[in-house]
Structures are given as structure tokens and as C-alpha cells.
Image 1 (cartoon, rainbow, N blue to C red):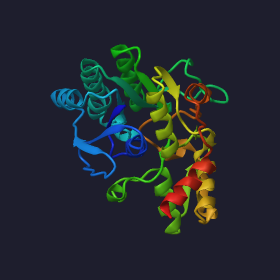
Image 2: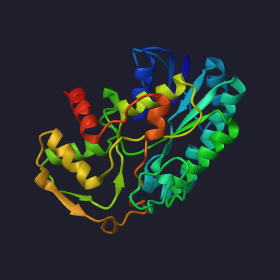
Image 3: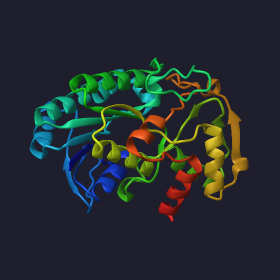
Length: 299
């Protein structure tokens, strides 16, 4: 199978490229952050450029295009709406248009933030009503609709709080929740984490497995592809401290209202992953399992 991956310099994209390359021909695409993987072909692709999308996707003619390139900084999306709209919606339209012309299917990575978090107990299923609170969530929901409207056989993988290790050359440029918190605790800093935002954090290696399986099994539609355990940011932080042998006493309990974040967050946007597990034949792992795998990588 031929698989093209946009945003392959990011967490989800880089892990998916490495895993998919074990069985398939992969083209890992980047834009502002160059990569040079030794396990697959790499190419520059600006997804905001319609002509470039048509050329790169058309020339490679993949069976699947995993579209992971996106604007994911939630507060920046709220403050810079034009930037978010172009990268999350317009770029998705470019990728889908080029893929359709090339006879390729698209698997778009989306987010739990398409939900408002007001469902009691969370654990949203794919058929639950969406109602994004932030502009980021709104652009990702619009991108989902664009993807499915382009071809009903396309797929959506909704995920949450992705963590893992970026390629070595990019690790100092960007941090995820786990790498940020490890650095804070290693520096002996007291860190406030909220106990009223609940998600299902996804280890990038496990997410990559889900993405590749969706392609291999030619699954279409929406699949919740987060981790298999719901946790508040504070609870997740405690597990991080324990796994990496850091001082959990440095963690302080906070509330979302204290953060004064520009973009509103859902309180409980945890996702039910049973549909994915049954259809793809995989297991979405717990926070503890994912952190242990990441720690082993780091070692």
C-alpha cells in the first residue's frame, strides 16, 4: 500500500510514518520543519497551497493520505482565526480535492474538542452531537465535514492530548504536555494542573497503530482514536511524575477558571474507543501503559 502523510514532522505524523514504513511505501511530508527520515521518502508539502497539494499527492498517487498537518495551538487559534481557518479548513479542502483527483482516500486527524464536554460522565461515542466551544474545535469540525463530503469512504480519527517523542532534530522546538511537564518537574518548579478538564490522552505510538490499521482495513467514517483511559490533567500529571521518577508534590491543584485561557475548553471530552477497537482489532492503551512506552523510548 502507498501512504502519504502530511505533517510528518509532528507527533502523530512522525510516529505514523515510522510504523507504516515497516509494511508500506510511505511519503512523509513536511513544510516549515524539515525532516530526513532514513526509513521512508520525505518531501516538502505546503498544504495551504492548492497547486502544491495537487502536484505532490498526484505524483505519488497514494492509496491513503493521512492528513495530520493542522493548527493545534488552541489559544492561538482563538486569537488568530484567519490562520486557523486557512490551516485547518482550507488546507483540508486542498488535500481532499487533490486526493480525490488522484483516486486516494483521506484519513483526517481530528479532536475531542468538537464536543462541548457537557455530557455527564463524558465518554462520547461517534454518534453523539457535536458542539465545539472554541474556534479550534469549530475549524476541526468543519474540516471533518469537508473530508466526509469529499468522499464518503474517507475517514476521521478523533484523538486527544497526544504525547510522545518528536524526531530528535525537532524535540527542542516543540513540546507536548508530557515533555513540558517533565521539564518543569526536573527543574524543581511548582506546577499548577487543573482537575476539571478530563480527556483520554493518546500515546502517539498507539495512535499511529490506529491510523495505520484504519488504512489497512479500508475503514471509512468517524473513529474515536484517543487513549483508553480518562483522566484529568492533574491525575495525568501525577502519573507522569510517578513514571519518570519526579516529585509529584510539586504539582498543585487548579481550576480551569483560574487559567484565564483565551479559548474555552470542554470540561469532560473523554472519548469512547470501542468502535475503533472492534473495527480495527487493536487496543487503545491506558495512560500508564503509554507513559511506560514513552519512558523506554526516552531511555
